[in-house]
Image (cartoon, rainbow, N blue to C red; front, side, top):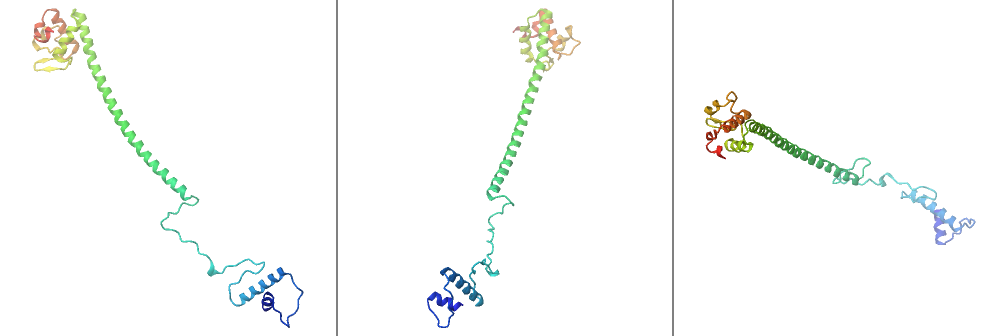
Length: 218
């Protein structure tokens, strides 16, 4: 059949060939292709697929999968490389945000501590100065001495500090022990702002300002 197909293709005839009914051109091509494929299998050649058959691949012709590039980090299952890159950027931003928040908290704690300290100092100063102001007002009203005069003398002597001391002179008006013992308030401590202010107003009301030779004449 193979020789016949070759002769038919080449247009030759053989005296002894059996005359078949003339097939159509398409049928002849199909028959010849099948015969040639069968001959190739017999000779051990790689066959072309016969008509109606599915091409097959031998074990030696199996295409091996491409080798993985070691420089590329494999992505997680179901995650594309672009998604993995974006996730890595998000993690970086989260860590940076955490650092910035920690820094902000430290700065906020420092500012709050400084503010609390300032408030405590301000309140302490107000608490300390308020009794002095009240003591001067009370002493001025008690003995009819101008409050401004008492304030000027106390500012000159102690800068309005009831705890001030300079040698043997102590208190808001820097009383010495001799003059202090003559006042009606000698039973109180000279550092008591009320006792000191009342004692000074008592002394000024009696013309004893000479006991303050510098500040008493202001």
